[in-house]
Structures are given as C-alpha cells and as structure tokens.
Length: 344
Image (cartoon, rainbow, N blue to C red):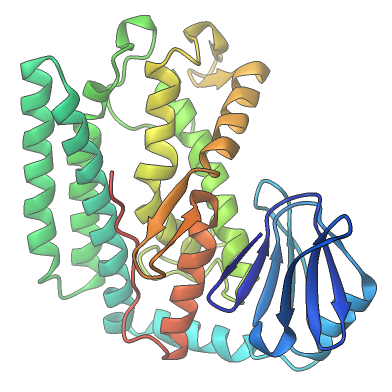
C-alpha cells in the first residue's frame, strides 16, 4: 500500500478497501492500516487481488475518485468511474499537445534527455567496475558520446531532430552493451540490438522484458486517464501504444537493462534455455520465461528515491508516478514534464 500525490495504490493481495463514513479504510484482516477522507483522493489503483467492497466502489464513483483495477503484471483490466469525469478534458488536452509540434517536442526532449542520462549512468557505473582496461575505456568513450548527444539535444528545434538524436544515443549505448556482459562466452554474445524476431539470447531477453514494461506503462497511462496510443516522441500507428513507448524510454536502463545484465552475469539464465527457430529467431523455453517474469516482479519491489516526490517508492510504481506527473503537465498544473533521472 502506498499513497503518492493524491492516488492510493493497493500493492498487495491481502488488503481490503472498505467505506467508513466519509472515508475509505485500507484493512488487513481486522487491522486498519490507513484511513483516508475521500475528498483527499483523486484515484485508487489496485495492482493485484485486493478485496474492494461494492460499497467502496459506489462511494468512489459518487465522489469522482477513479478506481482502476490492474493485474499483478500491470495489465489494465477495468476502471470504475462515476457519470461525471474529467478524463475527456485530459485526453483532449493530450491530443492538442500531440498535434502541437513545439509542445510535443518539449515533452519528447525531456523523455530523451532522461533516457540518455540513465543510459550514461549505467555505462559509467559499469566502467568503474570493469577489470579489463579495454572494456572500461570503450564504456567511458560511449558515455562521453552520450554526453555530447545530450548537449546537442538542448538545442533540438524539431521532433525529427530529437528523434534523430535519440537514435544516435541508442546506437552509442548498444554499441558497447556487449561489453557489460561477462558471460558472452557462455552463449550470450551481443552484437547489436535486433528484434522481430530477436536473433540471439540477449535480444530475446531484452525484447520480452521491454514488452512487460510497456504493458505496465500502458496500464498506468490508462489508470490516470491518458490515452496510451497517442504519444509525443513516437508517431501514431494503429495498435501501437505510442505514449507507453515514450515513457518507456526513460525507464529502460534501470527497469530492464540492469535486470537482464544481472540475470546473465550472475548465471541465473543459461544458454540451453534458448532455441533457434527455423526462421532464425531465438525463443526462450518456458522455464527461462518464468524465471524472467519472477525476476521482473522482484525487481519492481526494489525501492528507489524519487526526486520529485522526495520519498522512497517501489520501482514498480515508477510508471504510475511518471504517468501522473505527465497528466499534471498536460492539465497545465506543471510547467514541464519532469522525466525521471535515475541514480545508479
């Protein structure tokens, strides 16, 4: 259970949400863990199998408190809302900003800047820990290259320029990603990012974990009333969650890349858990996929300090916090989108 900004998160399966007078109570068995007056809440997000009484659902709807139900894996399931909703206004504001090249570029620049800083942080930390001088030097050079791209990003005047710099930064980052893998000789060689289908075990792990993260962020966007398909950095495309992909850029290094590197370097996944399909793609077996799912859920429990909220939160709530902050910027409550800059 966590209360961030004006949203209550139910993060465990054994919680109950009940109505008591003009308040909502969070209970565990007969113990009351939290009492929150309804006028202090803007939303309730259940990330599991909490028990919510029908009276509490109706109470939320009557008081315009959005009640969102997500699966334990972050997939959006349903939302209970009353007849009066401000979501249409938020979505219309989102669509207007997405059609405004300058406003969209401002948000895209914030997202790309955080991505480059977070990628650079991961490389710099790895460079300090490297025992091979050649690897440490290559990682440090790539980190310097990302710093150069960051400086040019500040002057990007268009979305196309921002997208180009994002691609340049990604190329520099994945150009040395293989040097972060100490188990390359164990069947985990990495020679660049590829997908659809992934052609090696590392890319298979990255692609699957990125899909999990995109699901989490898409659910978070829907829970705060944003349309996950209308993005700023990524162009609209039928069926593509462009906004979720936007927000994912800043979270990839700490929520996925670090996880995949740990699984490989700590020998928690083995090359025998992958098979090459006739078309050339690489596929995980069921046990490897299950291990990755468990590790991803455990990774989301790791606590981080969020600089905007100035408090500790589980890493798994980061998509929700960033979606809420973006919604506040779109509503005009914040002058800019505060993307997340992570400390490695």
